[in-house]
Structure formats: structure tokens, C-alpha cells
Image (cartoon, rainbow, N blue to C red; front, side):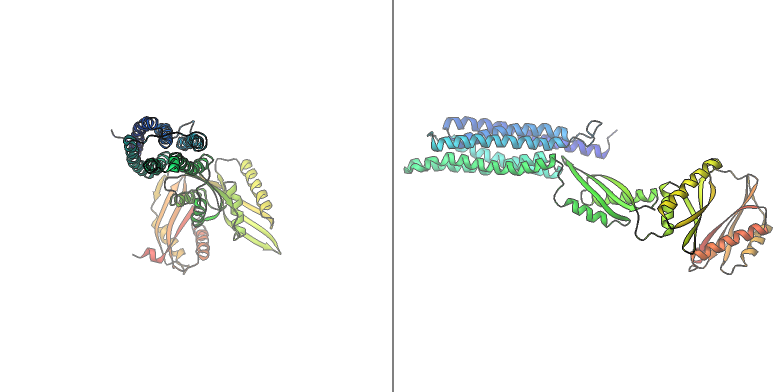
Length: 476
């Protein structure tokens, strides 16, 4: 049985990264050995500096080889953000090795320029080795760069950058050797210093590369946010409908993986389910900028400036995970009287339910000080699934209730009449058709009055449910 596509892709990435890093190690071994041999046989500081540079590059490529094998391992209990930081650490170690190379090259160059004259013997082997080195560096910088861009690997990118600059530094060494040969042939004394000067140039190139790498690796190790990404994410998330504010955006990188942590303000009246939808939309907006990022979104409740008294009452109830409905507010000479219905678990005792409602009302008075008094109707929220005993076929009752409905001119039609008995009580439901443009408040008033009339004319009814429909949805 084959593994999942994601696992197969991850294994393919690890294999490809390790293969190119392994090839780079082999190339570094060969080049370093050749440079050491011709460096000592010719006495050229330029070649010896290149040999030292290549030797440290060999150590760096070994570190890279092992780091790319570890960095792509999935997160575990001890490394919950994965192992990607090993690549950043590898690049940091490589920077330190390069700076050590520079210190030795500069020291030796100063000695040769001012305190100790060293006669070098350029040979065809020296030129051949340096040209061969330039060709190998060109090949592996291209291969490493391609894989680094493909998988966004900082360790491989560091190696690719080194080897691309090595081409130029090796070229300067070759130029230095040519100038030494020219000085001897044409008896130009000062050209004998071309070799240590070439070594200083190599050191300058290495310092430049090291400085750029140092800044990047230190930023990654200290979790510095990529330039401009934070503001892009803020702008994208701010455009998500329903997001009131972007309170915090934090971004960190481990290897080739980004982690984004956001706090966003949402209306405090939104439901938990709606909050989940908005969190998903925020994550999608972040992925539009950082496609493979691991995104964590923390929603924060916020009061809106446009909230009315009803929104504020519902917000208090939502904070207590309670559902209030049928809210009515009356203004008695500047003193607000609130009437509301609240649903509580039908298995609660009256004492427990009353205590919970008392606490809810106290919270509402504290958060909405305009309220003078509150009257709460406590309803039982069903916690069990009922099984109807029978469906009742009562044509006379249906005709009678339709006649009652016909007395309301706004009701265009009544259909889908269903009567059933549940625990010995009669339940009736029906659909009523209304004009499309009838205000919802008027629809509710008619439903309420119709339920009252039904129960007055048929006292055996325990519950009446009326479903309103617009006329355009009820064309037959």
C-alpha cells in the first residue's frame, strides 16, 4: 500500500536535498586536496588561501549535508515547531568558519607584503587546478541554487552563494599568478606582490559574503520577521469581511517553514461557529502571502461602535454561552425595562435555573447601565429526542384552522399541514405563504396571533409551529 502524496513529496524533497549536498561534499574534497598540493608546491598565498577557503567550505558542506537530513523531519513532542532551525544554525556555523578563513588570509598577506618575502613558483598545474576549481564551483553553485530555490532551503542557498563567489575569488588568484609571471618576464619588481594582494581580495570577497549570511542567519535564529511580510499580512487580513481589527501579527521562520501567529478582533456577538468560519478565512488570507505557513489565529471579542441595546444584551448572554430571544425593550421616561426569553437545559432544577438567570441579569445591568429592570422568561431547552406516538389525520381540524388563517388577508396560502401526538399531546405544524415584501416584524406578529387563535379555537393543541414562506418560493 503506497503512502500519502504529502509523505511521498516530503521523502522526495529530503532525498533530492541530501543528494545534491552529498555531491557538493565530494566536489569539495577533490578541490581542497588539489589546491593544498599546488599551493604548497608553488608557495602561492592566493592558492593557499583558496585551499583554506575550500577546506572550510568542505566542513560547511558536511554540516549542510547533515543539516538538510535533519531539518525536514516532522515536528515531534520535543520539537513542536519542527527541526527547520538546524538549517539556520548550519548557515550560522558556516559564517563563523568563513570569518576564521579571512583572519588567516589577512594575517598571512600582511606578513608577505611587509615583513617576509615569499617567492612563488607558478606552474601549469596551479593554473589547471584553479581553472578546474572554477568549473566545478560553477556547476555546483547552479545545482545547489536550483534545489535551494525549489525547496526554499537556507543551508543549500548559503552553499550556492559561497561557490558562486568562489568563482570570482579563484579568478582573482589566477590573475595574481599571471601578474607574478608577467613581473618576472618583464622584470617589474612590484608585480611580485600581486599574489598576496590577490589573497587580500579573496578575503574581502569572503567577508562580504559572510556579512550577508551573518545578517540573514542571525535574523532567522532570532525570529526576525521577513521585511514587509507583516504589513502585507495585516492588510490582507484587514480586508476579510467580519474582521474588526488585527491586534497582533507575529511571524517566525524555521528552515523553509513559516509560522504565523495572529490575534484578530471579531464582533462579540458572533456565534462560535461563525467565529470558526472567520478564523478559516483569516488563515486563507495569510496563505495567500505565505502559502505553506503554519497559521494560528486567536479570535478576540470586540464591542462594535454600531451596537444597539439589543446587540449589547445578546453579547452579555453570548459571553455566558446562553441563548436569549424575544427581547423586548420599553422606555419608561428614560428608564429601560427589558423583557426576554432564555433557554436552559430542561434537566436543570428551577433553583439552579433561577440562580443562573439572576447572575445573567446582574451582568446585563452592569454592562448595560441604562437598564432599570429585567424580566426573564425561563424556557426549557430540549435535551432529549422525542418519538411521535402517531401521525393524526384530522381533516375537520385542518379545514377549521385553514378557515382561521383565511381571516388574515396577508396569508396567501396555508399548506403542508401535519398533526401528531407526542407524549399524549397534540402538535400541529404548517407552512403559510406571505407576500415577498411583507416586513418580517409584521410576519412575526401574524404568526403569534395565528398561534393564539389556533389554540383558542382548538384547545387540545399543545404546540403550534408556523413556517413562513415568500410567495415566489411557493409557486405551484
